[in-house]
Image (cartoon, rainbow, N blue to C red; front, side):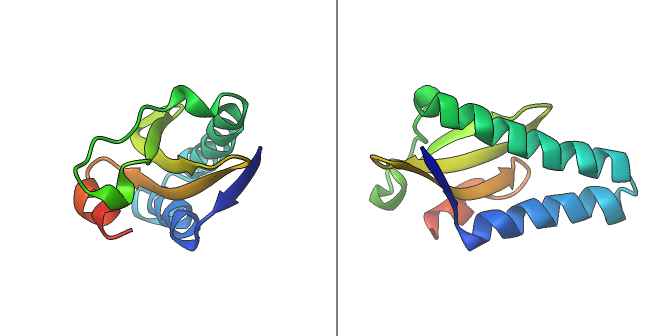
Amino acid sequence: MKVLYRQTAGDDIVRQFRYYLVTAEAPEIALRFREAVRRTIQSLRQNPHVGPRYSSSNPRIQNLRSWPVAGFEAVRIYYVLEEDAMHIIRILHGKRDVRRILGNE
């Protein structure tokens, strides 16, 4: 299965990596986060239906699924499945206004 990233998902990874690297001054955590995202997405590729559907009355995001980043469970990967591809839409920390952010997708 192909994995396609929206620009916003890539931006989310960079934003969270930069937070750990600069704000938290924890380069080892930043590197662990980046690797955890990679491993989690690889795992989702093998079993894409594992993520539950995101509960929303907004029809634009009803097919959205989510799964936590291994070792960083407060951060979730939001994705949509198509026949031959997994589209990574966002990768968001739970402290953000996730419902509002996803509603704008």
